[in-house]
Length: 597
Image 1 (cartoon, helix red, strand yellow):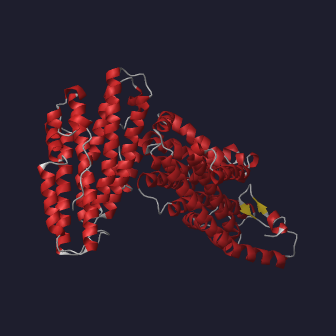
Image 2 (cartoon, rainbow, N blue to C red):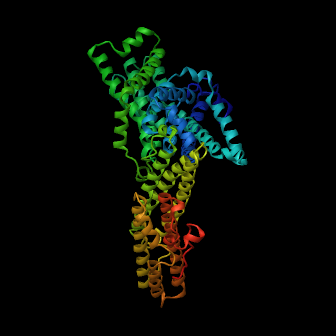
Image 3 (cartoon, rainbow, N blue to C red):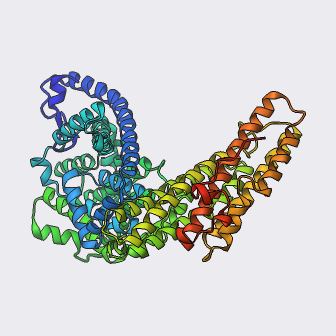
């Protein structure tokens, strides 16, 4: 871009105009054509950077999630008033409700905020962003450049290492701003093209057409304020009426919603709900303000325009007040109906299967975890883990049916819920606990660690059962071999689920005896595997051997979990060495199973 053309960029007004161009008319025309051509590539590059920013923010917020940080956000957005203040502040700083919506969606995706608690943040970000006077005193571009520099240096040199995920998150936020800035810059020349002015001029006297025009042009040019300013310029020149300008303002807000909807096409689940709340707000605003417009201008009832005309006679200020009334009025109107809006968003854009599986049941209310009741918290953590253990047989079934997506969803859900349980127990470990409670906590943390290892093994084993699995032999013996593994694993895991939720020691004791290394059940399984491996070539026998090792590791881990369940129920001092078999002499951990397949 030339220096002269750069002087024609009024960044504060967010619209390009050639008022300072001193070249000849033809030169200005060529500049406009060149800028319009380059604008498309800038716009596409901005979209790419924007999507990368979304990914960085969401993924790194999820990695840096801790229970302490969750509690901070939970308390800060505990009331609608606090959430509104947070949203108002974010709108004032970012001057972009879309950025605020996507950042908040990242917080929801990572579990730091709930959709219902985040709605006031998104709605009031619109109210804050319409205070355009801040654009004249706050250069957000400079702040973004500084943010990108420091975050980029931290990411590149990995210093400090403890804050690397935070640095990546801030770098992603900077990319969000940069991407949107490039999108606007690429679209600015488009707003000044002759066909845009011609379209606007054609809407004179056609109110609804002015609404549609503002919506479409804003969606195409990516600049809400730019379209509004062009409409104001045409109105001041006598080519555009005040009613058409008002409808153009309403249409420009709807057009920005189309842009937000387009940018959120790849988003699913709860983050989608929050981003669409931003879209829904503008839709609700149009449903309220457009009928009022027709009542006023066609019915002769003094309403919105009469109010702003009473406040000021300057048309530009009148339109500024219209923008403020649109955003603040809708925000106040929606304030009492956040619960209903949250339910509506959940119905239209429901949670994904993974999000549903990742939802906490017993540890969901973070406020209760601040109470001084460690025994109750451990009990809730035990029940939360029980919900995960019950799903282990579903891994085997999903693997047998070749449902890789279902396996991925369950594995990711386990990581989310299990991580929350571990974080809760880690926080309890930092408290001043009594001897008995501390011993129970140590045992429970060990039990959770064993279940973590078991889930990894079950996930790996289940992937061998599906059609076309990488380790599945094609022969009949191989098919029968995997069938034996599948049925046996399903049986042991189903028994474990029953033992976990059994109030006494009966189920855990039976499961421990069934899964002992030298028990009759495993010996019978090994003999069957040896029979099936006879007569197959070396390559298939090697694959079967590896699958057998993985299966026996799963069984060994089931045995350890069953032993720990027994110890937790009856106490270490009451464990009968004869009943525990091998574990009586060397602790509760049985020896690893022999892979004789």
